Length: 302
Image (cartoon, rainbow, N blue to C red; front, side, top):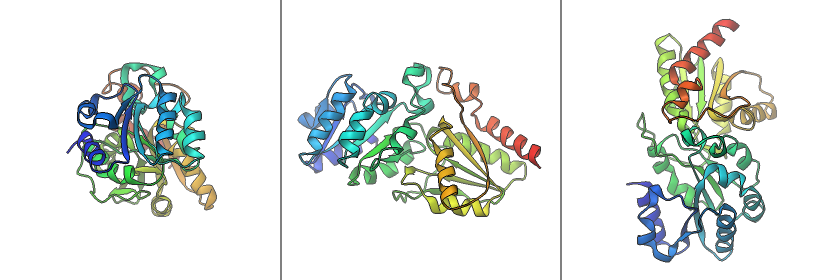
């Protein structure tokens, strides 16, 4: 079963669903021929894509739209905010090449503020699967949700067997531990998993959490981790401002919790364009370099 298979089954079995793209169809290239007039291509016109999707949603359809994450969340931001967010329309926004996945395409294509933008819109939820398997586990529930969703699309192969049970707003607890809790999502999950193994080999007890949805986020598991673990680490391919690190700050301030948090993210700069497997190395976001940084900070503060 692939992402394309899931969309095909949903669209063919329920007349409400429409698949739409802004010339981004590599992983759903067969759908135009299968779905016919239930597949709509608008061209490189993200604002038109969202405007059209909203018109369809107001008439009882559920559009699943696809575009580069950077242009979808920035070029069409006002349309998403005003037409989808305010009206609370069940449009599903699938952003391709989010975060480091834009690879060599350059800063204009880098969606590394997309979480900050989308979570700031009331009613718009966010799904950030760790890899292709995680995407396939959760996508049907997200698409069938009555609420608008932004989805960070990923088709990278998984490094683990994920928990097949998926609930919106519920994180996946990958491992238990009490010294360090790593909180992450999306593409860098595999690097977080490598870092966990390295830290455990050095004698640390490591809890690893794949958050899956950042909005609604699993506040319970975050608060539990803050109480249970000595140090929390956030790992994300996003600007440090407005992403997971900011979300934790909001949760801890609201609940008057004081704890040690190490943020690992992109700090005030766009990343150097390169092949996808080279970007984490250059940006010090490989599992090995993440583990070294965590140990260095903990040793300095001890």
